[in-house]
Image (cartoon, rainbow, N blue to C red; front, side):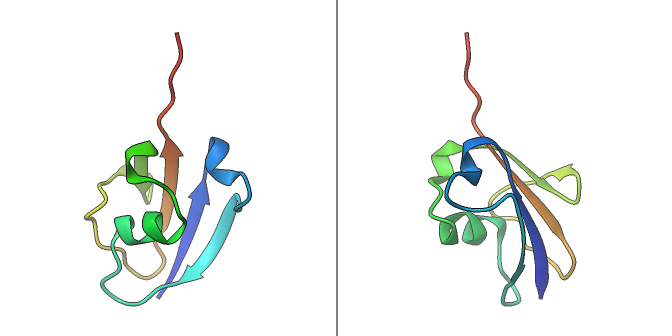
Length: 74
């Protein structure tokens, strides 16, 4: 299946902003995060087709996954 992955903020460093990926069936959001070498503890917001999702959410053909880091400030 083909899924569009969008990365934000420093997750783009040495990676990409937007990329289409071919993934096997039954792939979960967390599998994509792991394959990108991103520590799951660093993920702040996960969006699937413009809706909040979780690492254990299963992906489907044509999905758009957006991965945002934890944002801190003060």
